[in-house]
Length: 323
Image (cartoon, rainbow, N blue to C red):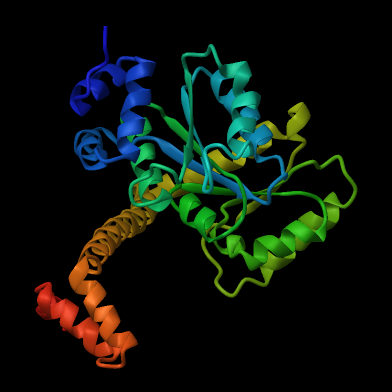
């Protein structure tokens, strides 16, 4: 029987455990029906603990996430995973690697893994990821894990979608310095020094703690620094314990800290959605024969770019809005 294309019907089916319905709903959440999906999913969301994982490529994030999925499932809880590639769905990098590593969970109805890429994502990843999280949350997944492929501004924006942010490092100064430069020191709630069976692990732990000690802004929560060898499962329970400890911290005192974090998150999402709509408006008014004539006038030195931009804004009826 063909799947419905109605978001409400798909969500009902997804909440009942229909994996195909959840997959279609996520595809719609990334595309032109994103608003419709958000409309039906929003009232069912808000319960999931969202955990973001980032760090340098090759740090072992996928293996770590895979180990955590196994641990979560061993406790009888369901989990959704978003593996995010900000470049291409055909890169052959972390997306496909995640799928290979997740084969141990392929037949597990309690695990749902979704790869996301910028191709096809309306508004870009900054807009698509929160909506995908909303869908998994609304579908009843108590844990949603987001994994990014590397370190950079896009990844920072993505993990800021999370309630708890985990930064994965490897032994050696390189990762610590890269994390510091990328601004991840400021957003991390938990540090994991993975591949801790290698030389230099204690130095890296010391370096991270030293950077935390020197942080200009001291917060109520001091990020935990844990060690792990994700490839053989060592330290996986300690990592999850740290993640859960941060979640418990957010929920203390009636959950004010969690609400504050989510308020900032939703504010950023709304700003991004508005920005994307304005970008589309600009794209539309800066196109066509009339706009080409204006550009020709600039090139022939008849008018300057500022005069032309004022004219285009006026003709589009946006003068009052932008004055």
